[in-house]
Length: 194
Length: 195
Image (tube, rainbow over all chains, first blue to last red; front, side, top):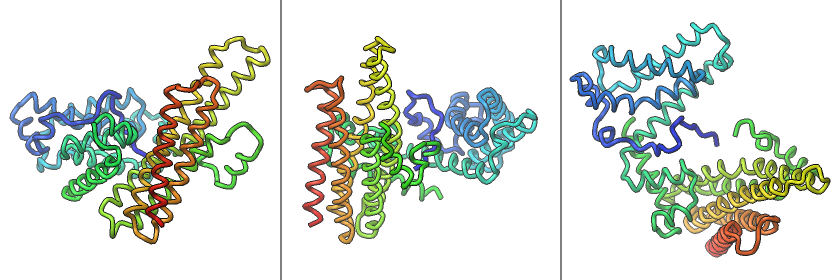
């Protein structure tokens, strides 16, 4: 029953921008390499929560350290993007970079961070959950807008069937089945990515 | 679920605390857990029905989400209720003359039962679907889950009705009763389906 909560601003519904939906990671890398400033902004937007989640949930870095790692990760992505061989492997590459910088920060600080008390196994489990949460988020972005909204309202905003039914002007008896159908589509998206 | 004083207890220990004679945990907490149990039964039925019911996995996921939402309300209800009782006690013993504080605490103590009633109505709806479309062997379990959820909704609505800050026609009471009614209808449908 444990839920992984991604650190998102409360007013952010987590939907991806038009460019994020339209471009694959590989296409985004190509545009960044070509010097497209909008693509750079999109890259930061697409991966900022991911990087931040690794820092704060995986390694439990305090806010100030997490912000430093965050800055450093995107600086390195900017300066080293040309070294990325497989353009579709952007996310694992950023993930690995973030993990390494988090470890460096903990080692350099010499402090007993709370993370030091977490067994490596527990940390790996949390990092796996972060990965899974972001994979779900990406798959969610590929569903239809009504499905995204339906799943967001029930699972993220904890709205009741009655509220969803009244807000979306749908018969209340059909909400659970609609959510199930959207979940089926989400599963298909996730399985298609494997 | 981590760090929840009630949910981390063994079931027997929780039951002992329920009967310990302290004001909390009380009926609000018991209502929350009854609904959580009902959601758990729906998960079981849906998972046992995956071969024959296309929506089963999605219904299980929704029931799990409802369980995760309602189970922590057992502790939340105990806390707001204890705070309301403390404020009432302070006014009675003239340790505090602030009726405003008491009213605020009593007002807060309706929030949690209302959330319980909403989750109960949704759980009962899922249970009714499971009783209608789930695997035949487990439809009676789904019907039982709907009845449990309806009981939780009805109990939560009652706790709101007897709150000192709530008058007849209060929107919280209206909402809670609508949820209880919805849950009762779902339970009746579920019992019909499982016959």
